Length: 71
Image 1 (cartoon, rainbow, N blue to C red):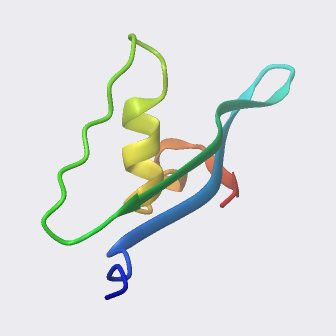
Image 2 (image 1 turned 45 degrees about the vertical axis):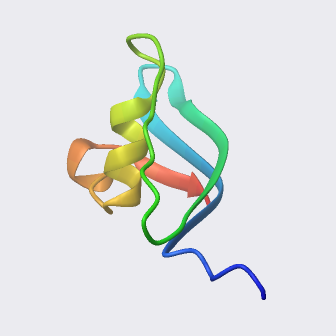
């Protein structure tokens, strides 16, 4: 029996925000799959991109001044 398709699939996510010197990449090449009944936890140090990743997946990056550059 094959594994069910993921409910959420992210491939090569890259998020950028503007700075005085141009766009700065704050998330680079993130990939993940989330299947039914799975729980995903994003863990990392302060400033490692956890919230930015969540905003990008929810489609809210532009509302905060950023952009999804890939993925």
